[in-house]
Structures are given as C-alpha cells and as structure tokens.
Image (cartoon, rainbow, N blue to C red; front, side, top):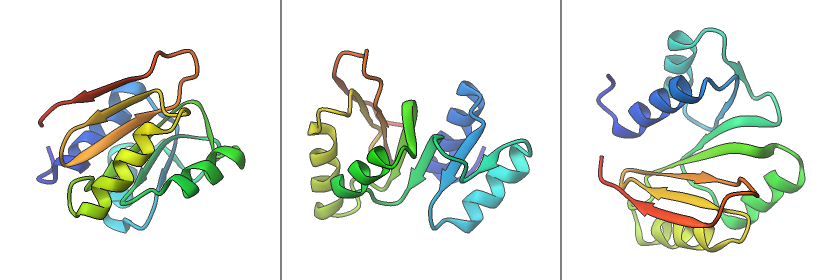
Length: 127
C-alpha cells in the first residue's frame, strides 16, 4: 500500500478493473510505480481505459472525448479535487456535464465515468 491515498486508489482501480491502457499525465514517479506493479500495462495507448490527471477542465475533457482518447468504459481519476477553490469548481463543473454519468468524490481524488447507458449518479465517500 502506498502512502498517497490517490495513488492507492489508482493502483487498486487498475487491479480491480484489469485495465490494459493507462494514461498518466505529468506524474513520472506514479507512472514508474504503476509500471513496476503492472508490467503489462500499455501507457498512452488510445483510447485509454484509465486516465489519471492532476487537474481536468471541461474543455480538455471535451477535447479528449472528441479526439477518441476515451471510450464508453473509460474511467478518469482526478487528483486533488479539494486542494483549492478552483480545483473544486472545476470538479463541480465536470460532474455537471451530461457526458459524465458517474462521479465519486473521495475527497483526495475524484473518479469520473462516461458510460452512456448508466443513469447519472454522484457519490461522496471518504477514504
């Protein structure tokens, strides 16, 4: 188990869902840890199964979606959603988008799903 809660969520999510294509933006140490833990993982292959980012604006999300970098079963893990007021505002804007069907606020990070057949739901859990 890693000391960083968001990294723990990332590792457990990859293990649970058996993701094959993962994209980790601007986090070299986290990427190396994932590579050591899951040597079969393919990085930056698109469309990705899991995207891990520090921040994600709605414009960037829309761009990723329109460029085909995310698929219907992709999960996005956003780190530090409560770090600043701006981060929380970005998070709230993301979860209001019609394309986001499931959102989970885990305080340290947030998880987004874009499954079209899923009814829109929002959860808050503390980890």
